[in-house]
Length: 388
Image (cartoon, rainbow, N blue to C red; front, top):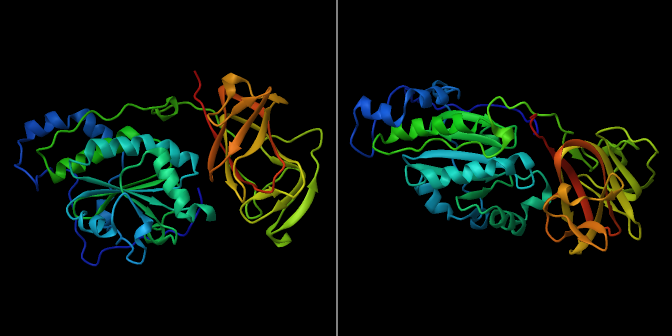
């Protein structure tokens, strides 16, 4: 999650919405007893875990008018702008190669299915971390891969990101029917309490709707108070943010610099190592032409993933070993294939590749090897597991 400056924009004429008031703008008001049945005390207690910031009077930013139509997915710009008045709006800032963002998508998709006909509009604001994610074909492919059917805006210029003074992926901003920011949430977690608060302001808008019990956590790591292990942190390969174990790369070396790397017999934990001839760019590294080269890392996690961009050719193989051997069947990520006793991934698209999905949380030595300069390696990400 990248850190940016944080400035909040306020309305000139503030509008305060009492978080305790339930009213109907679209249907007949109901009695407190009926509302209590729809939104029982335990649900209200769950919603209260979210900080209601209505009294800060932060208004929903205007949607960009300079973005071309192809940067709106699943919706036309005109329809989206005209459809927001009087609606509850959830702006979800995400990035399609971010593992933390990907893990929130089952909840975002479910909320869209549950509440799109009850007054909710979800807008997925895609803020790209890497340059290749600005290409419309790559984002279009990701939207289809994840099955996203709600409106998506390609915020390539960070206009929406900056208008919210955002600092993180993922980030959720929930606005009430008057366009006032009620809740902001950064990172993963708190899904049940967030949904309960969403229900509360949907009922403020229209007390005649029915709301279901909030979704149960879809993963062990999503459960409240889950005790989880600390995985290896996100690890970048490019010049701007790399921290290699066998060399010190700084941006002063300049892009396009090629080095011949060697790995010592002992690797430090949680550091990325290069082996062979690699050319370093700002966001990624790539094997030098005619060179077989490897990435290696001694990591601890349940899952290990790698963001890869095929720089020229596609369909090439990257051989993967774990602890010096082919990745065992029980530890393979969904992108691992096997042939002739060798495990590998086939790189066709610019995305995050799921390399390992180990039976449990443990430490392993992972190595990926390729012999084409099209292998653009960007960043490793890792997931945790909970203590049993």
